[in-house]
Length: 288
Image 1 (cartoon, helix red, strand yellow):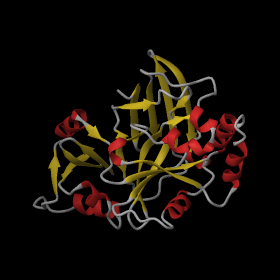
Image 2: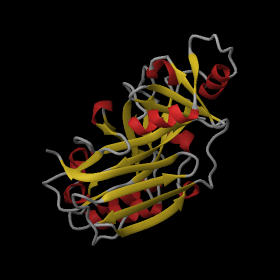
Image 3: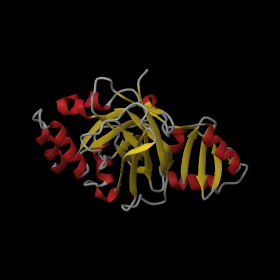
Protein backbone atom coordinates (compact mmCIF):
# COMPACT_ATOMS: atom_id res chain seq x y z
CA UNK A 1 0.00 0.00 0.00
CA UNK A 2 1.02 3.59 -0.52
CA UNK A 3 0.04 6.65 1.49
CA UNK A 4 0.23 10.02 -0.24
CA UNK A 5 0.01 13.30 1.60
CA UNK A 6 -1.50 15.76 -0.87
CA UNK A 7 -2.83 19.30 -0.81
CA UNK A 8 -6.34 17.84 -0.97
CA UNK A 9 -5.85 15.34 1.84
CA UNK A 10 -4.39 11.95 2.67
CA UNK A 11 -4.72 9.43 -0.15
CA UNK A 12 -4.35 5.68 0.24
CA UNK A 13 -3.55 3.52 -2.81
CA UNK A 14 -4.27 -0.20 -2.49
CA UNK A 15 -4.31 -2.67 -5.41
CA UNK A 16 -5.13 0.06 -7.92
CA UNK A 17 -7.91 1.55 -5.81
CA UNK A 18 -7.78 4.89 -4.01
CA UNK A 19 -9.27 6.07 -0.75
CA UNK A 20 -9.35 9.42 0.96
CA UNK A 21 -8.42 9.06 4.64
CA UNK A 22 -9.72 11.75 6.97
CA UNK A 23 -7.40 11.11 9.91
CA UNK A 24 -4.63 13.55 10.73
CA UNK A 25 -1.31 12.35 9.29
CA UNK A 26 0.43 11.86 12.64
CA UNK A 27 -2.43 9.78 14.04
CA UNK A 28 -2.77 7.83 10.81
CA UNK A 29 0.82 6.65 10.46
CA UNK A 30 1.55 6.07 14.13
CA UNK A 31 -0.48 2.87 14.44
CA UNK A 32 0.64 -0.29 16.23
CA UNK A 33 0.54 -2.20 12.92
CA UNK A 34 0.11 0.27 10.09
CA UNK A 35 -0.39 -2.24 7.29
CA UNK A 36 -3.13 -4.10 9.17
CA UNK A 37 -4.76 -0.82 10.12
CA UNK A 38 -4.81 0.41 6.51
CA UNK A 39 -6.16 -2.95 5.39
CA UNK A 40 -8.98 -2.62 7.90
CA UNK A 41 -9.83 0.79 6.48
CA UNK A 42 -9.95 -0.59 2.94
CA UNK A 43 -12.16 -3.48 4.01
CA UNK A 44 -14.49 -1.34 6.10
CA UNK A 45 -18.06 -0.59 5.10
CA UNK A 46 -18.58 2.44 2.82
CA UNK A 47 -20.35 4.17 5.69
CA UNK A 48 -17.08 4.41 7.64
CA UNK A 49 -16.31 7.99 8.56
CA UNK A 50 -12.57 7.41 8.21
CA UNK A 51 -12.28 6.55 4.50
CA UNK A 52 -14.03 7.38 1.24
CA UNK A 53 -13.51 5.84 -2.19
CA UNK A 54 -11.83 8.23 -4.62
CA UNK A 55 -12.21 7.45 -8.36
CA UNK A 56 -8.87 6.76 -10.06
CA UNK A 57 -9.01 9.79 -12.35
CA UNK A 58 -9.79 12.05 -9.40
CA UNK A 59 -7.01 10.50 -7.32
CA UNK A 60 -4.51 11.14 -10.11
CA UNK A 61 -5.67 14.74 -10.05
CA UNK A 62 -4.92 14.90 -6.33
CA UNK A 63 -1.40 13.66 -7.06
CA UNK A 64 -0.85 16.00 -10.02
CA UNK A 65 -2.10 19.01 -8.07
CA UNK A 66 0.49 18.59 -5.39
CA UNK A 67 2.10 15.75 -3.45
CA UNK A 68 3.56 16.91 -0.15
CA UNK A 69 6.45 15.30 1.68
CA UNK A 70 5.03 12.30 3.57
CA UNK A 71 5.74 13.77 6.99
CA UNK A 72 3.74 15.40 9.76
CA UNK A 73 5.51 16.63 12.88
CA UNK A 74 8.16 13.89 12.84
CA UNK A 75 11.88 14.58 12.99
CA UNK A 76 14.21 13.23 10.31
CA UNK A 77 17.40 11.49 11.43
CA UNK A 78 20.11 9.85 9.37
CA UNK A 79 22.67 7.08 9.62
CA UNK A 80 26.14 7.52 8.16
CA UNK A 81 28.88 5.24 6.87
CA UNK A 82 26.58 2.24 6.54
CA UNK A 83 27.86 1.25 3.08
CA UNK A 84 31.49 0.61 2.10
CA UNK A 85 31.36 3.21 -0.70
CA UNK A 86 30.20 5.84 1.76
CA UNK A 87 33.05 4.99 4.12
CA UNK A 88 35.59 5.30 1.31
CA UNK A 89 34.13 8.61 0.12
CA UNK A 90 34.22 10.11 3.61
CA UNK A 91 37.81 8.97 4.09
CA UNK A 92 38.79 10.57 0.77
CA UNK A 93 37.18 13.91 1.57
CA UNK A 94 38.70 14.06 5.10
CA UNK A 95 42.24 12.84 4.49
CA UNK A 96 43.79 16.31 4.37
CA UNK A 97 42.19 17.31 7.69
CA UNK A 98 43.41 14.14 9.40
CA UNK A 99 39.87 12.93 10.04
CA UNK A 100 39.85 10.01 7.63
CA UNK A 101 40.38 7.34 10.27
CA UNK A 102 37.16 8.31 12.06
CA UNK A 103 35.06 6.92 9.23
CA UNK A 104 36.94 3.65 9.02
CA UNK A 105 36.46 3.18 12.75
CA UNK A 106 32.73 3.94 12.75
CA UNK A 107 32.16 1.57 9.81
CA UNK A 108 33.57 -1.28 11.88
CA UNK A 109 32.23 -0.17 15.27
CA UNK A 110 29.31 -1.69 17.12
CA UNK A 111 27.69 1.75 17.55
CA UNK A 112 26.47 3.30 14.28
CA UNK A 113 26.76 6.94 13.34
CA UNK A 114 23.35 8.58 13.84
CA UNK A 115 22.68 12.28 13.50
CA UNK A 116 19.76 14.68 13.40
CA UNK A 117 18.96 15.71 9.83
CA UNK A 118 15.86 17.90 9.61
CA UNK A 119 12.67 19.21 11.10
CA UNK A 120 9.56 18.59 9.04
CA UNK A 121 9.18 22.15 7.75
CA UNK A 122 12.64 22.03 6.10
CA UNK A 123 11.93 18.84 4.10
CA UNK A 124 11.33 19.24 0.36
CA UNK A 125 8.66 17.20 -1.40
CA UNK A 126 9.05 15.59 -4.81
CA UNK A 127 8.92 18.30 -7.45
CA UNK A 128 10.28 20.94 -5.08
CA UNK A 129 13.75 22.46 -4.98
CA UNK A 130 16.56 21.23 -2.77
CA UNK A 131 19.30 23.65 -1.81
CA UNK A 132 23.09 23.66 -1.87
CA UNK A 133 25.14 25.95 0.33
CA UNK A 134 26.89 28.96 -1.12
CA UNK A 135 29.79 28.47 1.31
CA UNK A 136 30.50 24.95 0.06
CA UNK A 137 32.33 24.18 -3.16
CA UNK A 138 31.59 20.45 -3.20
CA UNK A 139 27.95 19.35 -2.91
CA UNK A 140 26.28 16.02 -3.67
CA UNK A 141 22.91 14.33 -3.26
CA UNK A 142 22.75 11.09 -1.29
CA UNK A 143 19.89 8.71 -2.21
CA UNK A 144 18.75 6.70 0.79
CA UNK A 145 16.11 4.20 1.74
CA UNK A 146 14.27 5.99 4.53
CA UNK A 147 12.45 4.19 7.32
CA UNK A 148 9.32 5.34 9.07
CA UNK A 149 9.52 4.08 12.65
CA UNK A 150 6.48 4.47 14.89
CA UNK A 151 6.55 5.75 18.47
CA UNK A 152 7.09 2.20 19.75
CA UNK A 153 10.27 1.78 17.69
CA UNK A 154 8.78 -0.51 15.04
CA UNK A 155 9.55 -0.01 11.33
CA UNK A 156 6.17 0.48 9.66
CA UNK A 157 6.92 1.95 6.25
CA UNK A 158 9.49 3.27 3.80
CA UNK A 159 10.05 6.27 1.61
CA UNK A 160 12.82 7.73 -0.56
CA UNK A 161 15.19 10.21 1.01
CA UNK A 162 17.75 12.61 -0.41
CA UNK A 163 20.35 13.50 2.22
CA UNK A 164 21.98 16.55 0.62
CA UNK A 165 25.59 16.84 1.72
CA UNK A 166 28.25 19.56 1.61
CA UNK A 167 31.34 17.40 1.28
CA UNK A 168 33.84 20.26 1.39
CA UNK A 169 32.52 21.38 4.78
CA UNK A 170 32.48 17.92 6.35
CA UNK A 171 35.87 17.15 4.80
CA UNK A 172 37.38 20.26 6.35
CA UNK A 173 36.61 18.93 9.82
CA UNK A 174 34.27 16.10 10.94
CA UNK A 175 33.01 18.41 13.70
CA UNK A 176 31.40 20.52 10.97
CA UNK A 177 28.97 17.69 10.18
CA UNK A 178 25.86 19.65 11.32
CA UNK A 179 26.70 22.52 8.95
CA UNK A 180 27.36 20.07 6.12
CA UNK A 181 24.08 18.24 6.65
CA UNK A 182 21.53 20.48 8.38
CA UNK A 183 20.27 23.56 6.60
CA UNK A 184 17.19 24.73 4.69
CA UNK A 185 15.94 22.17 2.14
CA UNK A 186 18.90 19.87 2.81
CA UNK A 187 16.51 16.91 2.91
CA UNK A 188 13.89 15.68 0.47
CA UNK A 189 11.45 12.80 0.93
CA UNK A 190 8.71 11.21 -1.14
CA UNK A 191 6.74 10.65 -3.18
CA UNK A 192 4.78 8.50 -0.70
CA UNK A 193 4.99 6.33 2.38
CA UNK A 194 5.21 2.72 1.19
CA UNK A 195 3.58 0.28 3.62
CA UNK A 196 4.15 -3.36 2.60
CA UNK A 197 2.83 -6.44 4.43
CA UNK A 198 6.40 -7.61 5.15
CA UNK A 199 9.84 -5.97 5.52
CA UNK A 200 11.22 -4.57 2.28
CA UNK A 201 13.25 -7.10 0.27
CA UNK A 202 17.05 -7.02 0.40
CA UNK A 203 17.07 -7.20 -3.41
CA UNK A 204 15.35 -3.80 -3.62
CA UNK A 205 17.31 -1.46 -5.89
CA UNK A 206 18.09 2.21 -5.35
CA UNK A 207 18.85 4.18 -8.52
CA UNK A 208 19.94 7.78 -9.01
CA UNK A 209 20.44 9.94 -12.05
CA UNK A 210 21.53 13.57 -12.22
CA UNK A 211 20.75 15.59 -15.31
CA UNK A 212 22.48 18.83 -16.23
CA UNK A 213 21.16 20.85 -19.15
CA UNK A 214 19.19 17.80 -20.27
CA UNK A 215 22.25 15.53 -20.30
CA UNK A 216 22.95 12.81 -17.74
CA UNK A 217 25.88 13.86 -15.55
CA UNK A 218 25.70 10.85 -13.27
CA UNK A 219 23.87 7.54 -12.99
CA UNK A 220 24.21 4.65 -10.57
CA UNK A 221 22.33 1.89 -8.79
CA UNK A 222 22.79 -0.37 -5.77
CA UNK A 223 20.83 -3.05 -3.91
CA UNK A 224 19.99 -2.34 -0.28
CA UNK A 225 21.52 -5.72 0.55
CA UNK A 226 24.89 -3.93 0.37
CA UNK A 227 24.21 -2.13 3.64
CA UNK A 228 26.47 -3.32 6.48
CA UNK A 229 23.93 -3.01 9.27
CA UNK A 230 20.43 -4.38 9.70
CA UNK A 231 17.63 -1.83 9.39
CA UNK A 232 16.17 -2.99 12.69
CA UNK A 233 19.59 -2.47 14.30
CA UNK A 234 19.67 1.17 13.19
CA UNK A 235 16.14 1.73 14.50
CA UNK A 236 17.00 0.14 17.84
CA UNK A 237 20.04 2.35 18.37
CA UNK A 238 18.08 5.50 17.51
CA UNK A 239 15.34 4.69 20.02
CA UNK A 240 17.60 3.59 22.88
CA UNK A 241 17.45 6.84 24.82
CA UNK A 242 15.13 8.99 22.71
CA UNK A 243 11.33 9.12 22.47
CA UNK A 244 9.41 10.19 19.37
CA UNK A 245 5.76 10.95 20.13
CA UNK A 246 4.49 10.36 16.59
CA UNK A 247 7.42 8.32 15.30
CA UNK A 248 10.47 9.30 13.33
CA UNK A 249 12.02 9.03 9.87
CA UNK A 250 15.50 7.55 9.55
CA UNK A 251 17.60 7.82 6.39
CA UNK A 252 19.76 4.71 6.31
CA UNK A 253 22.85 5.80 4.37
CA UNK A 254 23.98 5.78 0.77
CA UNK A 255 26.22 3.72 -1.49
CA UNK A 256 25.80 5.99 -4.51
CA UNK A 257 28.37 8.77 -4.36
CA UNK A 258 29.47 10.65 -7.50
CA UNK A 259 33.19 10.90 -8.16
CA UNK A 260 35.34 13.51 -6.48
CA UNK A 261 35.34 15.67 -9.61
CA UNK A 262 31.56 16.12 -9.44
CA UNK A 263 29.66 18.84 -7.62
CA UNK A 264 26.04 19.88 -7.94
CA UNK A 265 25.11 23.10 -9.71
CA UNK A 266 21.88 25.13 -9.63
CA UNK A 267 19.48 23.73 -12.21
CA UNK A 268 20.64 20.12 -11.87
CA UNK A 269 17.78 17.63 -11.75
CA UNK A 270 18.14 14.74 -9.28
CA UNK A 271 15.94 11.67 -9.73
CA UNK A 272 16.03 8.88 -7.14
CA UNK A 273 14.07 5.67 -7.69
CA UNK A 274 13.49 2.84 -5.23
CA UNK A 275 11.68 -0.32 -6.31
CA UNK A 276 8.14 -0.44 -4.97
CA UNK A 277 8.14 3.13 -3.73
CA UNK A 278 8.41 5.36 -6.79
CA UNK A 279 10.52 8.32 -7.89
CA UNK A 280 11.69 11.35 -5.92
CA UNK A 281 12.57 14.26 -8.21
CA UNK A 282 14.13 17.57 -7.16
CA UNK A 283 15.86 20.47 -8.88
CA UNK A 284 18.92 22.00 -7.23
CA UNK A 285 18.99 25.68 -6.30
CA UNK A 286 20.48 28.18 -3.87
CA UNK A 287 18.31 29.38 -0.99
CA UNK A 288 16.75 32.67 -2.13
